[in-house]
Length: 254
Image (tube, rainbow, N blue to C red; front, side, top):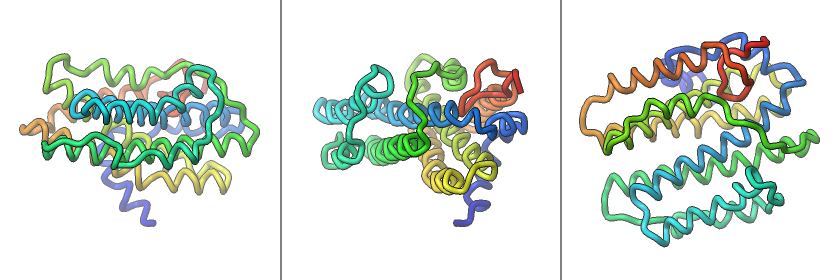
């Protein structure tokens, strides 16, 4: 894979790279359990975000229920002390045939992009869990970082601007994930490095999907709004952060 060609648009889109201090902190073996645990949760939250967009803006009742049912076992395991389900069997149940349908071209594109994103993010969730099990890292619930909350705090509260802003936020979160996987990979052991690099292509496509959907539903030039969120995202990434997480800023204890 040509990683540089894949990452070049990501680096141009983001307003800052991952700080060296975060990488130095994240590469320490004693921090790997927390890093993987938060990565696991990030994959589920990405799937939840996509599900909520489809349910709120285009889903019919049957499609909405299908999406809810697809995510419930993952949510029960991650957030409510539920048992670990058979993730491989669950993954086979997610298909476009059971997802919402619409006659609206933009809505159909949203469904197609988000259902694929949900499938990929839940597959990544399962893969991270397998990595944790192989390394005898137990799953423990942790608090959320300030990152997503800090991004969503800038979302406008009236439609269709709310939708546009949420899609731009999604683009930045996916782009940062892609950039951070690539930045961290050289400091990891060979199996984990290979796994993180394998995630780059899907994450890069996810950010583009979000941007394209935002531009199409807006109908006006979004450069200024995209820049505003880029500046906010860079601030969250480059300033001191009291909690170490996958999308956190500079660790205050670094």
